[in-house]
Amino acid sequence: MMPSSAALRRVRVAALAFLIAGPAWAGGTIHRQLLAEPESLDPQFISGSTDYDVVDDLFEGLTAQAADGTIIPALAQRWEISGDRLRWVFHLRPELVWSDGSPLTAGDFVYGMRRAVDPKTASPYAAALAPFKMAHEIIEGQAKPAQLGVSAPDDVTLVIDLVEPTPFLPGLLAQPIALPLPHAAIERWGTDWTRPGHMVNDGPFVLESWTPQSEILLARNAKYHDAGAVALDKVDWLLADDRRAALRRYRAGELESAALAAEDFAWAKTQKPDELRSTNLLATRYLVVNETASGIGADEKLREALSLVIDRDLLVAKIDTRGQRAAWAYVPPGMSGYTPQAFPYAVMAPAERVARARSLWGDKRLSVTLLVERDDIDHRIAEALRAMWQAALPVDVTLQENEWRVFNAAYHQRNFTIALTGWYADYADPWNFLANWRSEAGPLNAAGYHNPAFDEAMNKARDADGAERLGLLEQAERILLADHIVLPLEFVVSQNLVSPRVKGWEADPFDMHMSRFLSVGE
Image: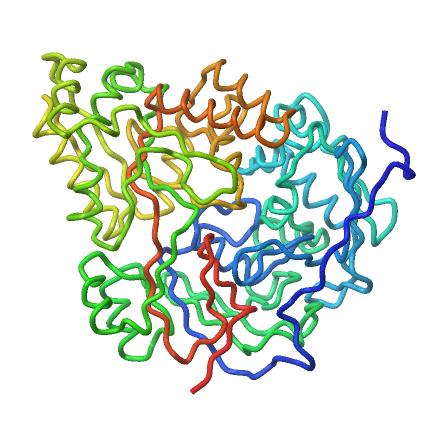
């Protein structure tokens, strides 16, 4: 039975500390780096970090991430939670509009969220809405999208009904999968609705032009609800997927920020220390072994052997020389109350690990293919992994390096044996990392991983609170690591050079640095 309105308790939302009197608009254009050509600008089809960068400039949800990564109110100015924590009622800001001036209502959230879980949409991130009532059944084709636990009793009220308490819901609602969508534009233009001239959006900037393999130009959205606090006139996202070339463009003044290549980090520390921004991220780089593939995918001993011979300390000291942190756990450190669970052999000496790996592997000779995105950092890591494996084990390793779109398609379609990838947290909760490997996680579970014990721990965690919940998530991580489907390599430290002209760039564990918080000057 749903709780009555009398059972709802008000959640007070503090005013934002960074608001200042008067408009922040100062004008100017910022030139920012894209590390890959975006796969899409449709919020329900994006999956790469560069796609997120642009989409977060174009759209906004009920909540948003502040410049430091904390969750703040956005289109919702306040919300209430029921006593059993299964119903959330959001109250939208009055008189919200889309970029074309048409009204933005709670019904646009209902439309967007139903579209996200509709099997016809085939969103790779649909499973992220699993806490919503009936979401799982809809994704599996056992119920209709109209049955999703989201409703709009009026234009400024949105009600979300959940199947279990979800403490991280405000963070989840800041993600692209939970955005409102412009029904009229999508119905009119279909898959072309994200093209310049067709796109209707609600964020601080609008899409002015998109030149594939070159740049995406955004212009200030005068109809954005907080337009007076947006300082920039334009955001010029420039494709600069070669980090070394991007550094040259940065030094020439063509870019206001640049992500550093491994070869350039030491130089930046000594030559540009005042412009170097280093931040420990809630992010892990790791290998995924496809459990549905024959050979290594089906043999846990072989998977463990591959993990054992990886010298993670050497990897971050000599290969990815950007100040990264060796990862023996999957969930990164930095989440309140959670202790990352490391491989037991993390304390063994390298020679001991190699000896154990050889005993597990035996004398069988195998060939494996490692799927890698075409990227300077990933190439260095992949070459090092190949050398480590081939030096210690009777295995031949072939690298399959593809540009982002091809890599991403192969990964989510499980067309690989081993893949080098990573996860950058959407919100600060270990669930965000571990939930991807539930049997019901769909394309997010690219390994096809299935372990009833892992699923049971995750299901129990959904119904638990506090320390008990975190303990169950720690148990789930131990199970995942013991199966050696996910082989952590490094915890990510972002290393960017940022021009002194840029103001508002703060340390952000999600590495978003949304343009709405930035300005440029002399």
